Length: 265
Image (cartoon, rainbow, N blue to C red; front, side):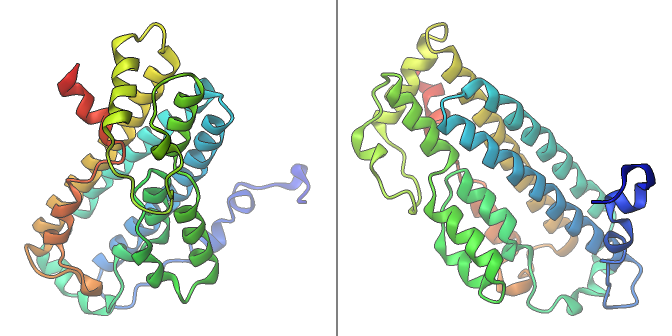
């Protein structure tokens, strides 16, 4: 432990190591921006994971109200991450193409932290494990996130314990596979939203979850627009389809019944 009396700002934040972690490969000015934008996103994702894991554990313990703070914080961080695309979009296509080749097969598509977040929110996909085979700790963390119940799984379990009609087959499902919308779960959420005073804690939880899903969709949309602005419809790095692939992600919903009930209310 470092003596608090001798603590400095730089030592507390480990600034020398943090600020020496940027290693542009080319001699192009804009590559530094590209590196810092993505490193910053990974730092924010680390904090998001820190909050979402806490929120999931609090929900699991039945302490719904305590989870709201972490979920609200995540939504605020997501807004900051979305705004960062505006900074990246100051880089023109000509700027990017001057150093794009040095990226090789790397791609944000391979981010283990983003995939862990998706898993924690219920979007499970074991195919992304292959991108972490050279990183044992990242592989293990992503595999664990795939195999463990998501925030939504824990929320549905608490709803069932409170007496809401969540189907047994949903509660006993294999949580390592992608969640599929359920008419029974929709009926349970409809009961919550039609009697908010009785089910106030779940109603508030539902809205906090929609905030996360909404912010994630907004982030994805801004990502698509930024990519189109910089590389158009070119293929992305790492073998992805670029904007074409990203467009397909706009249809994903982490908590589908919390969207579908709005038509039914």
